[in-house]
Image 1 (tube, rainbow, N blue to C red):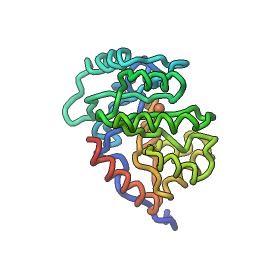
Image 2: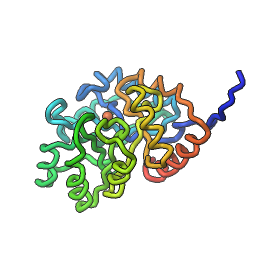
Image 3: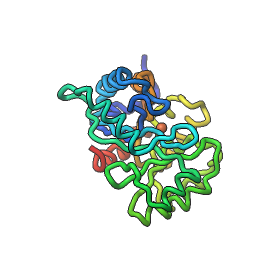
Image 4: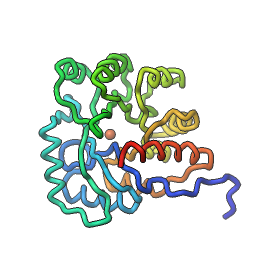
Length: 243
Ligand SMILES: [Fe+2]
């Protein structure tokens, strides 16, 4: 059928590295076992994603992972030999909840799981305040670590673009969950994601996949021509930093 609205036509995920997902088996609310993880890798391949850096939750209250538990899950997954020309998993990192425990670990200089030795993926509670983010950012930047705020569109207490802009001015990079644009987390989050995309505030895009199903849904993502322009500039930046 003829569509009045112009659509973005290029493949969205081709060649990208997924920097936020829950692919590692059995250590958080993502993949439950190696079999599920391998099915997720097949779905990644179908999206054209070149590589994945798994980022399991590190959140004392719900998923008390440590560098050791994450490393063990990574090793378990690596026992599965990925065939040639398929999506690769070459390293791992984590998604850190910024809370008192995280701040204490920062002060004590505990080892952190980083993306490319340089970036750290962080989140806050969906209904939580942003107050701790500023000192977390200050502390991380002093260590030459750049924080990437996961799915900023999902935080209900951040309402205005100016508040987002403040966080960016402090030094945060922003990572869009592609599923937000499909309405996975409700209409309010979808609208906010569209707005942040329009304003050019995102630096990275990721799947935040917790299951095979999440990745299959992403095949249905289509963008308007205007959104496609923003998406392409994110994609270009991401390809430079993560391979
Ligand atoms: Fe996540």
